[in-house]
Length: 337
Image (spheres, one colour):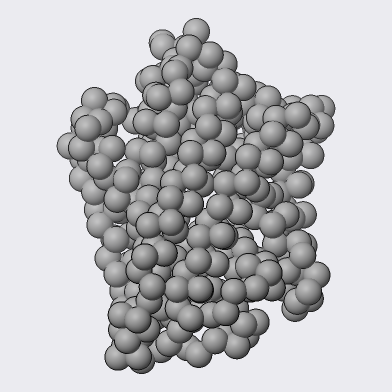
């Protein structure tokens, strides 16, 4: 990667990390730093390794889904190990502003597999959309029980299903692509947009969507159970109701964090987790804040750490030369098959 691109990525990553630190401090201060610290100290830390294992279970299934998606767009030669390598290395990119750093995963996919960059980017988008559908489905019972969350649930569901449906109505999608060729600032990206669409068409076929969403539901359920263990560690009595609320809160807050477009959902996800724990479970602000910090450490920040470790052993991966122009990727036509 050219020095200027490396510097730009580093600046975005540092901004995301600093923003995350500010969010954690603000959350602790808002709930009374001393009381939050006491709740953390009295937490049953013997449960935390199990929380981390459940997080790894989430990454294991989502990484396999990523590998499955790569196969759908023609990357038939890539090994499962290489797929996990790219998947994990992409974790820190989620905390870049607007998650624009995740565009780089499309470049990595292209250089590792020969698949056009735009198709690789379609994999990244499809991965996010299938995760969104998975957590929405996990949220269904909770939304039925707490109807105040219906508007957000329905709005996001319509958007996600709309993207999938339009991608599968080929005449409509092709007509939109044809129209885009007439737009001054978009027509230069027409070849990439066509590749992106072809990738999306393959990834959003009903069978692929069902498999990916199913894997996503099981993977995010693992993190939901991990959140339940955190609540138990903070002294919340065990019950099926608490388990269902834990899964619902984590799933729905993941949706809120994703649609916020903030780096890693920072701020939006934390506020929704703490707020829902207070409103639904009736927890004190200190306990809710402690639970929020613990689950975010075990999920978001653990993933960033794993990704940075992957970067240390992936110098050749970070040395690629992404072709980025005005936020979009152009495919290197000389290397396309």
